[in-house]
Image (cartoon, rainbow, N blue to C red; front, side, top):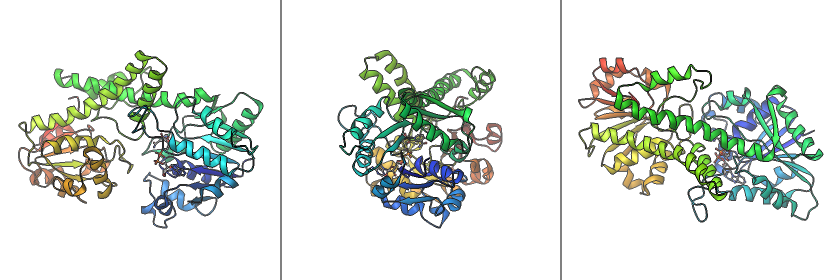
Amino acid sequence: MVKNICCIGAGYVGGPTMTVMAYKCPEIKITVVDLNQKRIEAWNSDNEHMIPVFEPGLAEIVMKVRGRNLFFSTNVETAIDQADMIFMSVNTPTKEYGKGKGMAADLKYIELCARQIGAVSKNDKIVVEKSTLPVRTAEAIHSILDNTGSGVKFQILSNPEFLAEGTAINDLLNPDRVLIGGQDSPEGHAAAEELTAIYAHWIPREKIIHTNVWSSELSKLTANAFLAQRISSINSLSALCEKTEADVTEISRAIGADSRIGNKFLTASVGFGGSCFQKDVLNLVYICKTLGLEEVAEYWDWVIKMNDYQKHRFADNIITTLYNTVSGKKIAFLGWAFKKNTNDTRETPAMYVADILMNDLANISVYDPKVSEQQIFTDIAHVNGKTDEDNQKQLSVVADPYEACRNAHAIAILTEWDMFKNLDWKRIHDSMMKPAFVFDGRNLLDAEKMKELGFYYKGIGK
Ligand SMILES: NC(=O)c1ccc[n+]([C@@H]2O[C@H](COP(=O)([O-])OP(=O)(O)OC[C@H]3O[C@@H](n4cnc5c(N)ncnc54)[C@H](O)[C@@H]3O)[C@@H](O)[C@H]2O)c1
């Protein structure tokens, strides 16, 4: 029976996942560790607004279980030593150097984790891959752990996380399924059963799927590839709609009613963002290429190309509509996060659209209810490589949506925050330069109402 869990990585996955596990398994002590001291301090803060991950419902549960059976710490070695089961929930970004640059997953954090586990462990442990990893990564982890010379035995399970940011708590409490990949051996089955027993505290056993390790690893990449593909597919057709007076929202409704297709993930937009879709599809492409499967690689690569095309199309449309120049014009950005109900901005389309408009000498004024000014400047610097001082000449961040829009030539909606639907749009119209343009990258607002108020309103695929 597992009594003591350590989770390495206190990020968007490790934090919420372990919070819910601790909440549902009060008899198990869970310690979430991270090298990033600031992040751990934030998780330990008594002010719920300081919790580093914003997710609806998360802070309330953290406050209930933290100090009871959930602990956040920077003491990685002690937590590993005391644990029966260790989750690896570290980041696996796209490699930015060397072989596989721009495509392969960078596994240096995972390798470091495995080496730390190997160096510290004095008794047998179950190691769980929670991070999204290329197929056959468990082999490399095995090789590191089996060669420590300590005689300690490790079982490695793959247990990818399927939560979506913005709905993480609900997804963790009521998942469609939990996937556990283990070795086909008595020890492998026993380890998988230990993990199954933990999830069975709150998830019906029939929703817990068991596979071999490789299928589990590859299922996560496949799931993200299919989800990203749906967005790129509907976005590709949004471009055709704009040329033909078909309406992409009507098409989504019409095809989504077909139970073979289903109605989720059919909303056309400025493009997908987030830390996962792009990196996981690129990783899939890379794996296929290295295995000589060129056609398969190319097929999935188009999902990414289409997403880039959509972001460019959105920005180009703003420039073209504003009489082919945005030089010196104020463009208000409503939203910066990659989707609503999260403060995560990794790969947000907003930063790429901002970069294109800033290259055309626009002045951008950003309002986002959950993203900090500092984060926005970090993001834009990541795209254009300029200093904050330089970027401040063209980009400002404000704490009020009405201020962002005042005297703007155009508004671009980049995140589908619900609050934007309830703004006083008449007041905004009165305060803007005329004609007052709205480019709705999320098809969030009611086109007819916006037109009645006097806006030139442009949704995606309409
Ligand atoms: N974000 C999502 O929605 C999501 C969903 C499903 C799966 N995933 C996968 O989960 C993994 C983690 O993603 P995330 O969004 O939580 O990343 P993140 O960057 O938010 O968090 C990772 C954390 O790991 C820490 N870390 C790295 N190496 C460490 C080490 N050796 N010791 C201690 N701490 C270490 C980092 O400091 C960081 O705080 C990735 O593989 C990702 O693909 C993410």
